[in-house]
Length: 221
Picture 1: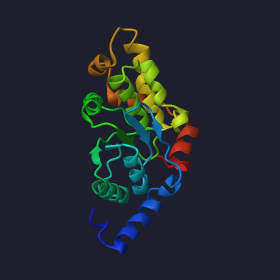
Picture 2 (picture 1 turned 90 degrees about the vertical axis):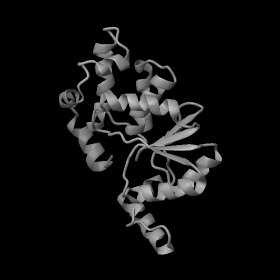
Picture 3 (picture 1 turned 45 degrees about the horizontal axis):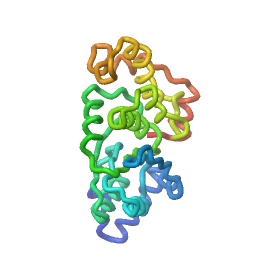
Picture 4 (picture 1 turned 45 degrees about the vertical axis):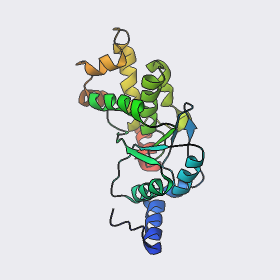
């Protein structure tokens, strides 16, 4: 992160400008796509430092970054803000257009059992990666069935199932069509030979207009 020097006013200003333009952060100045999905967890889009300060004032203790982005302006600003505010920052990278491995699913279950609450988890838009992690949270931590928890992947959170991000819905649809009728829990299905991330992704078909909207117009990450 040496290219984003926050130790000088000029360096901080360059970092903020990079964040504004390259990360489309101007769209998030007044819109956080924030939703409390339980009394201990909120999901949102990428927060600005001033928004992190506001969340700290509301009792948030941990920030879960689902994006990665170790050499980016958003990361530099987030690390700096969390350090100054005394917020714990946890990185849990997950993709919006891939089927997670069985190991990643189990790691998500472990994350929600060990993270310090109240917590905020975010991706870029708060729609797709926050959505699949919302499903995992509601299923593993809150005990909802997959059929109930899949509501976390919903247009109300700006999730688009018609584009390539619809592969996230497809994972759970396949479980409900194959695993649940066979009497398998979601974890058992994920651990079975039927759960092949490469094959599942190859079988998924996005709609052309959905790809155009999410990738070219909305420029979802």
